[in-house]
Image (cartoon, rainbow, N blue to C red; front, side, top):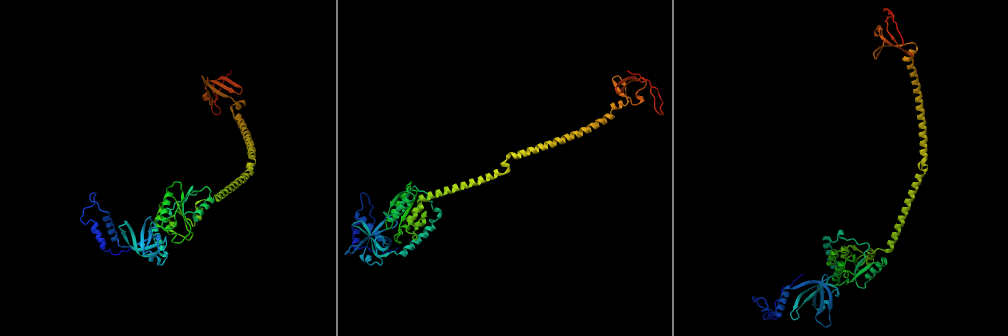
Length: 446
């Protein structure tokens, strides 16, 4: 921006000041002492005069250049806001411009603001107009791109996922444009039940950005809209400038509804492509990426069903073969055969055990018989049968075997057991054998 020195007050201006403006030190305005309109108008004119000459950038939205007139009237609009400024200039500035000026041209002008006290309007009287070239526009876009990137607005983590099957799609595009027809026809062919909320806006020129911002805000507030598509066909760098506007980029990032950018053709790359949740190469590509293809989805379902059925049949075949192999094994082909074999083996073992037990019993029986015979042969009964006798001395109820002659003194009552019974006797005397003295013994029997 640049500014010139403050202009000196003209005689007419000085006269107006002395005649209508309150002098310094005068009391403030009040209901009893209001300022006249001329005083307010003069003060506003003086304040605007202090601004001096300035450089202003904007977009021409209206040119009124009539033949034979000495003044051309223009309207200069801010591309990012709904604000405009009246501009006047010499017609030769427009006719002799190195680049033809027309409505929609971006320019930088140098001039001084003037307040017309009679009408109460402001106009910018310019003395120089410089069209903004493509190179300068691209440089500004690159600077804005670097700024937005530094703020992290291109971060992939900010991207919201696009719903697989949106119920309602918000479409922002030009009225009756090729982009609108492409999106509607392709989306309807792919999924006939899809619904659209269409907002037709300007897609180039000074009114494009404000209208697009209003459309985004309206669709973002609608709970039925699941995704918003911003679509426009191809165009020149100047035509696509609204889609590299900073306010639009920030609005796309701030929206809660996913936004798809489908601006221009594949080589076009406005900044809204970088901040959008999904970039589509063309409006047709946007319709394909937002709306699933019903025919393709049905074909995919059929393919998955066939693959699932084939996998199930393969699994059943494998399990059937495995079951057949198990059933063909001997243990499953004749389950009772092993039991029969085991039964025969048990019977064989039982017979062998019986034979072994019988053999053991016979052996032990024979041994027992021999022992019995031996015991019988050496037992008292056999000894008695061979002529021996057992002599016992009876002493009341007690009986003692007589082993020596001292055990049966003369007069002792004796009981003599023989093979077939017992004899009661009394000892008449004793007799020693060998060197002992022989004593004659008499006995009596029952």
